[in-house]
Image (cartoon, rainbow, N blue to C red; front, top):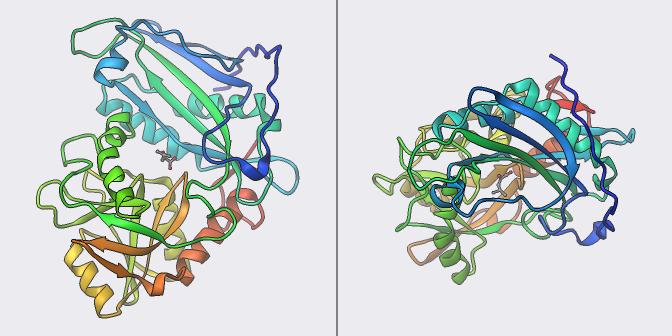
Length: 359
Ligand code: COI
């Protein structure tokens, strides 16, 4: 089905930020996509409007009970002057899964993708072109319905906002560096049966306390352990974690508490294509530490839409620092970053066929 949306352009376009000093999520573009859901009517009235604050009733259930979901995607300027998206169908399907968990009505995959394309087209001149930059796209759903009762709402708003960004971890857009990571032993991110596999605000707000603790110890991020035994590695901050031990690359299996990252899936598929042995399994933190000590763990990295591929330089576990690969960026981490970012920006051909979608 073809979707078209009316466009109301802003009368007061903003000045664009300096592409050399973008940071992450500091400036928002001139327009946004918005669409409502009403019970009995479904999703309706998708449109592009000038970027503006949303008016919310202070009793909106989203504000109190956190019934919301979101996605993270990026648009890149390609060498032909066109715009690339990366596997947008994966984000559309993941949002459907997240919505099911949060009792929010699903959005049709084609409608989601059409909305993202329309939003990017409306602000096409905001897609930056400096190396390492992109237009970060944030689709999200909230409920504006005023109620103090805890039950699924009958009205929702789907909105897409966009922000030109540099690397999520400062400096990684110029040259990758190994992050220092705090292995969190007290707090947990998600438990099996909870919302860990869904992209919803609660998974992120509950992690801030550990991230704050990590910063106090000079670490950029947290390595989460499983909720039940605090024994198995799960995710790094807001990203999926990979460890190369011997000739095999391990990442946590999708147990229900792990976010099924689009970059995680892409990295696994690329490595399979390159003949690198990979395994999805529950990896014990003690195995990881032992492998660092005996030198068999030669590389580790995190993957996510925001960070793409972010090497791990060191784990801080039980008060001891365990450097990985002398804190140098590993060959495979660099190859994955170069290939993924290269495909996304159109600098190298899409070896998987169909991952890169051009506007
Ligand atoms: C992403 O990688 O797109 C994310 O959603 C992480 C985000 C919380 C910055």
